[in-house]
Length: 220
Image (cartoon, rainbow, N blue to C red; front, side, top):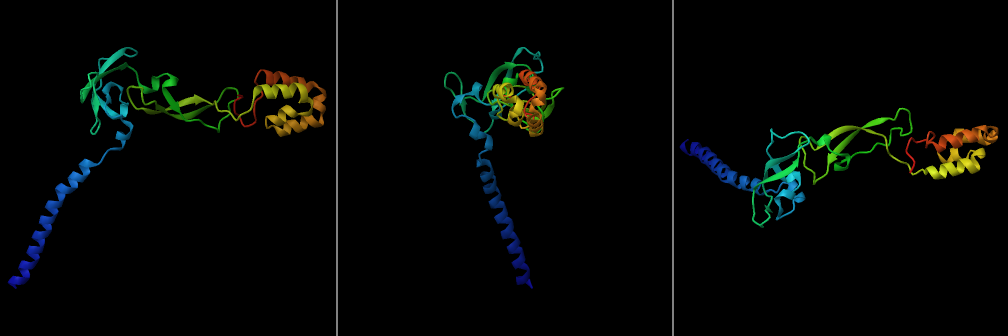
């Protein structure tokens, strides 16, 4: 009886001992893992020129919108940078304009394009885009934000080609066929351009850009 009872106790003691000895080892493994943002952080570069994903900055509540402001920042773990004297540092300051990311100029962020909306319509259609701030731009708030943009995609149709076809071969519906409007093209073909009236109207409509490609895209 004594032997049977002592064996489970020794087994329990071994399990506890093995667990306690493995715990620090697991912590060491977790601490040595390199975060994914490190791949975007240049090593031993100037701290003030690091991408925003490589640093953590304190909010400057005294900044005035649209005015330059100074922010206190600190590099994230596993990120190494230097100052102007080539000395490694962790705490530094950056200067930027006090404004939210969605208030930046259109050249400071990149947005998704939509090919499902009509660019040639009245009024012009908008679509929901997801915009991302460029890496070298600093701003307040979320760096990925939604925004309503005008449809501005193109399918490769040239305005000059469409206008030239309308003037020269518009009576045969060549301009409408080129723009992908085959129903109107057949109508012009079998009516000889609406006896010339439809041809003249299309020249004006294509000339001012009112008639565009059938897929709703813009001219190039």
